[in-house]
Length: 251
Ligand code: 6GU
Image (cartoon, rainbow, N blue to C red):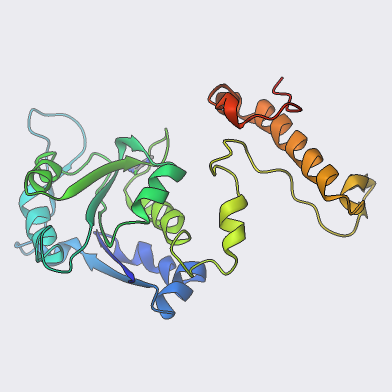
């Protein structure tokens, strides 16, 4: 059953890149039903206003709950228990959210429906997620990392790409989805090399030409451990010792 994704944004053109590449092909192939909506279609005044100054004062603007409420009611029509609705998740990109990881992507790839509410970074009135959670929707406020973007659109594209490539049939070779960095192994992926074997004075490791699959696997694992220790010591500390073999060196 194909995944339905609705995105609501004040910059719908920002999301045009979802017509391209892997996600564009998945849409053409009918694997994803993706629809983009302009939040301003639910504004009422002549200027199609969607924000207002923060209650209590301060810099920036906050997006109005009444406009978001009408938009999300229309897009979520049917409600969380609608027959045939399956698992619907309201995803709100925000730098104040929980961190989106490969585990989050794996979880959200199991949803039947994602509704993505892109706000500007000062945020959507906080009663909006509370309201939909109280109505029984699964609401996830998610950040893609510790830096600030101007709005949720770029983060939404990142999350949708990470989720979409886990859907059956979206990536041509399922093995490439299983083998990669941040999968269950808890290590970065080993380095990638191709021909020519000698290039600008740099030679690829001879073991890769040996045809000895056990030696190749060992050399790749050693390299993955070394680069993870150098680049991501946090991942080495988080390793489950049960996933290490007797020849692994983590220092
Ligand atoms: Cl999800 N939104 C914004 N505006 N900034 C971010 C983010 C999201 N994740 C990291 N920075």
